[in-house]
Image (cartoon, rainbow, N blue to C red; front, side, top):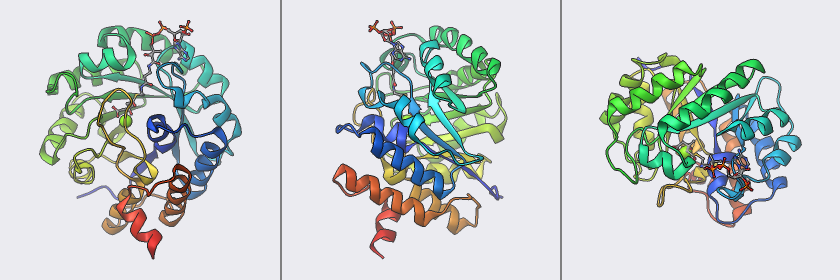
Amino acid sequence: TLPQKVKIVEVGPRDGLQNEKESVGAAVKIELVDRLSRAGFANIEAASFVSPKWVPQMATSTEVMAGITRRAGAMYSALTPNMQGFDAALAAKADEVVIFGSASEAFSQKNINCSIAESIARFESVAKAAKDHGLRLRGSISCAFGCPYQGEVSLDAVADVVGRMRELGCDEIDIADTIGVSTARKTQAVMLRAAREFHLDRISGHFHDTYGQALANIYASLEVGVSIFHSSVSGLGGCPYAMGATGNVATEDVLYLMQGLGIETGIDLDMVVDAGQFISQHLGRKGSSRAGNALAAK
Ligand code: HMG
Ligand code: MG
């Protein structure tokens, strides 16, 4: 039996916009986050406190966090690769900070300029600071299903990082298909392996849609009991350190699937469709959510 209820984490303002060629101004990001807040998300990834030399699109994160209208009960998350990022996230009043590592050694070097072991050591102080300040801590694991630089990533490599993230005190752990290469059975194998290391109800699926498999991977994850998923309004995004990777699975498509399955999300699909239209118009192109485009054309 599938879960009756799922949590959808909207990552478009971060994972989506971090990879847009055209830099989107803070005012537009604020409007986007506010529209998503009104649509009912309990968790929105709104900011990333990383080096602006590495990801210039996220340089306005402080401004964005200061400008948004926070909905009671909603959490606004920020990526924090190190203490410099944590201090900025704390000052910006993030509710949840995200340490992000990788199950692939090669990707770890390209994305955060250090080995997996070095990243875990670096995250220790961030994790401790998060606990000290009462912030929620999430751990994200890139390339859990394959890597653009090294190819195969073993189940043991994923399990090892899940275990380390658990030891760091993560409240939630994201299993990410950075380059969208997984398929349904493989997805179930990885999720079940991760669930041997961490609570299944606090594991999330973060699927990019490069090979058109993201919705199938979500359904496959539901079948093994995963109940938290990340998605991006209008299918925005990609990853600056994974060439050719497309955006996250589109939020509208995920909501349409959940609606059809009778699974509760607490989110208003029509309002998300409007938010998708808003950001697509701003970017001057058609959004990549199939359900979003179909519903907008009605
Ligand atoms: P580094 O160069 O090794 O760091 O970068 P450093 O400590 O040597 O510092 C170098 C410079 O960066 C210094 O500035 C620091 O002040 C600055 P300088 O003295 O040269 O002027 N710096 C910072 N500035 C602002 N905020 C900070 C910060 N830290 C250092 N927090 C670092 C290491 C991790 C900082 C760098 O590699 C980096 O910023 N990487 C970001 C990569 C990134 O954001 N990738 C995309 C997000 S991850 C993702 O999308 C995957 C995910 O969606 C899941 C999935 O799909 O797989 C989550
Ligand atoms: Mg991602």
